[in-house]
Image 1 (cartoon, one colour):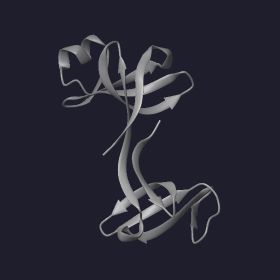
Image 2 (cartoon, one colour; image 1 turned 60 degrees about the horizontal axis):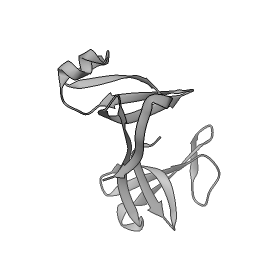
Image 3 (tube, helix red, strand yellow; image 1 turned 90 degrees about the horizontal axis):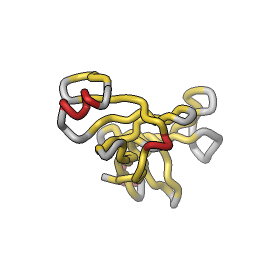
Length: 120
């Protein structure tokens, strides 16, 4: 389940973090020009103009007929955030209110339908 920036560089897609006119590319193993910033985490900083594509990717789904974004996965559960905008629906589903209009919860993966990746 992806939720974050990705960039394509030299025909390969990387987890990314844009920062003004630069973009950080991340990968778990050794690579040409990548520097280790943590155990098993390498980074390469490039000008945005050098990447072939930069997009925000998120995974969406439906749970109990309502729209959600998938934030994480753990065992047989998905951490989901409600995007339907109706607080009575969110509360009736037992979702946790994290902020005004932001409702999240854990959904059994086998109850979730329509998983798909969206790029913006």
